[in-house]
Length: 359
Image (cartoon, rainbow, N blue to C red; front, side, top):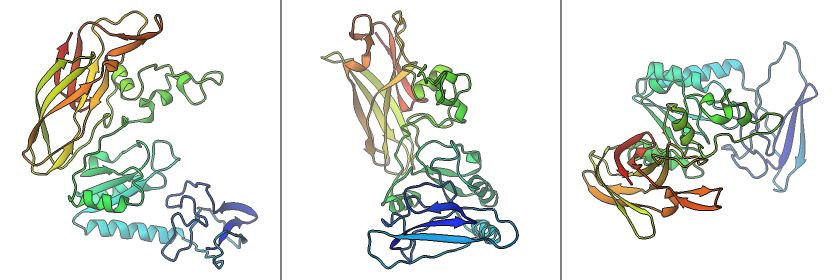
């Protein structure tokens, strides 16, 4: 508190306050005079794991005044491997004796598509002693979930910010029904994505001859999974809630201006009030013009609606004319694709419950 500080071990710098990010489970992002994530006694924490050989070691802490004008306070703690193991075992014991176990896990930069530290091991061990284990993810992107079939529920809260604690509690306690839908495709492995697929070195970060080529063209995200016929762990647009929804009565009308109105009847068939997010996907034309690339299907409209338990609504989703068009490099303008196309409505890109062919 009141200072910027760096810690050295045997003359080598380990860490310092500021915006630098470590990869150790439990380290603090941007610990500095801004008190981004202060502890209960208002001091900032910076932590690093080190391996020590037997014998004495020299520890040095350099400080410099920050802009707060607060009295300088420095605290040095050593968290031993023995204490870490004892705390780990205490967590397993607590989970074993609990009706429900909730495990919070997080990720940041490293490892890619994985959880730092021993978090996967912790989830596995807790799930082994408590069949009612819930995992809450505080992540910014999809990560591998090797234990996903061993837990009762996974709640993705992303990085929810200052009100994230209240929001998480309200969802876990059933005071609100989760209704978010994935804005990305959650692959089973890192190799499922074009940028990290070994078969496509041109698409990788290093590229070929230092040049990265977006060779997938329009097949970005879920479109890539559809083109490659790859089954994701969780599809684009996927999400569960505390109820279920039934889709019926699909009707499609052409409207003035060249677009479509897609009408669908949705009923909340469960016992909880909740939101639902109906999604409209448009398939490629039956006959694709030469030199033009179309995805297998593309999201063209969606909406969020609230339905009380047992309630039903007829929803109209508008598809603008531009969603029916492609850019012609030959003529330098937008062109409406002709011929038969399939319009699908459902709860995700892989949960398409109603289909109709239009011309």
